[in-house]
Image (cartoon, rainbow, N blue to C red):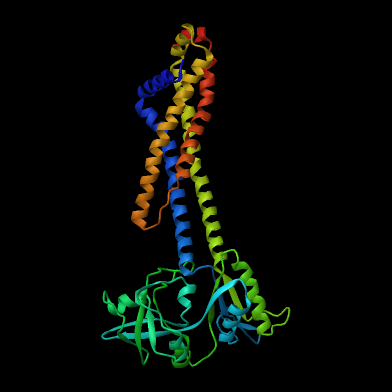
Length: 406
């Protein structure tokens, strides 16, 4: 018996019991759909996390002032005053794996424009900050080095601040009040969205010259942080070691004593997010695959019932010349058809349910081609695996006993 003839006969046999065949395929449909949905949602979430980390900056490292140990009590981060502008200059000058560094500090302030006001974060830094953060302008320009030198009262607005104070208008050239000081708006940044991990709005910020914030808003000269851009992602780990060694030497920290600063590598955060997403996707995929196994057991059960019901038919086929291989092939193809149809419907179910979750909950979705291919292959393999025993049992029936079966 050739494959095409066996395939047609399998469709006819399954068509005689449409409801039973549909219920048999239900486990495969749910299993394939669940696997595709889980992979789609998991990959989408991982991609979103990577995009959020990339939005924070290019090959970026964060150097922050550390905690203070007062009488054995460690008091929070950003409390030491040892991180200074000279450290930022030394990092660029003496660390070969560093391409740029932007020193900075910050303070929360109420900002006023006309009848509108908004509480936001004022960040003081230098013009290279926008390069380190890979943050382009929607309108206007950055403040200049001269503005930093002169402690000019100029500001660049994040998109959230722009919306809350100006709505749809272009604020470039307008004057806002930060605390009691008037600031001229020179630029507006493109939206970056929320940051990975902290989930804070990166656009809810006003960026001004470092000296302006230090002298006119804070009254302090030490830095809270330094944003550092490494030459490449691979070299960011070398840059981290170079920065730590340099700052320990500059701050005269003896061997064995704790650092008075912290250095965080965003590449570590990206790798951790990717690993966490992979682990969760694998675990959820394993759980979803259980439905495929249940579907396979259903196929075996219904095929055994079919063999029993068609015992006389099998005897007649063997009596007119069908071999054991022909009978085995016939029932294996029936199992294969169940797997193909169930897998195809499962793919449609998985894609549809993924899109529904994306629309309903706002989660990102990314369904890779391998997810569809692997799910389909798994469904077919399960169908053939669990269909083999019933097919083998049918092929080993005694023709004479089968013809006598009532």
